[in-house]
View 1 (cartoon, rainbow, N blue to C red):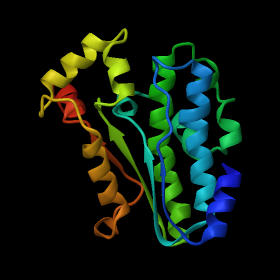
View 2: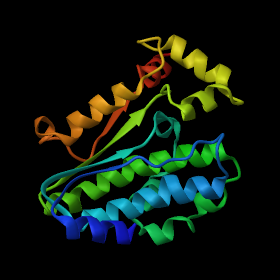
View 3: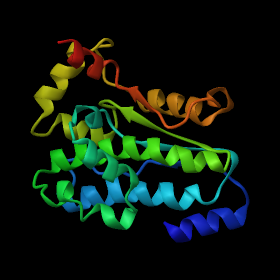
View 4: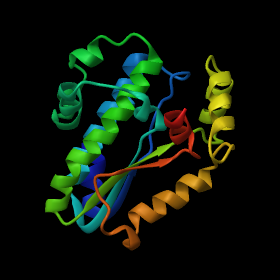
Length: 204
C-alpha cells in the first residue's frame, strides 16, 4: 500500500481514492478478514491521507453489517485511532473465532475510522467518507445468499423498504456523489445504501 501511495503521488495530484477490497464471511478466515477489511482500510486512510490533494476525496466501502455491531466506547475509540499496525493485537480482535463477527467488527471499524480520519484529511483540504452497501448483486453477494445465512438475508431484503437486492450501479451512483463537488460539505460520514434493510430492522 505504501508503494502504491508513493507511485500514485509521483504521477500527479491524487484527487480521488476508493478502497473497495474486501472479503466476506463465506470467503475467508477471521485472520484474512481482519487483514484485508480492517487493517487494509486503516493503511489506506493513513497512507493516502498523507498524499491526497487539496480538494480531493476518499471513499471506503464498508457494509451494513457494521451497523449491527455493538461495541464499547473504548473498543470503538481504539478501532478509530490506533495505528494500522496495532489493530490486529486489540483484545476485541484477538478473541474473534467467527468470520461473521470479524466481518461486522471490521466494517464497524471502517465507519468509526473514517470519522476520525476526516479530521486529518480535512487539514489537507480533503474529505473522506464511507458507504455501507446492503446485499448487492455481485458474485460476492450471491455467495452470501447461497451461504449459511442466505435465508436470513433474503428475509431482510423482503422486509426492507425497497424489497429488492441492490445493484453495482446503486453503489457506483452513491460513490460518484460522495466523491464529487456536490458533496463538498460531507465528510466523516457513512452512507447506508442498503435498500432500507437497517431501517426496517430498527423499526421492528
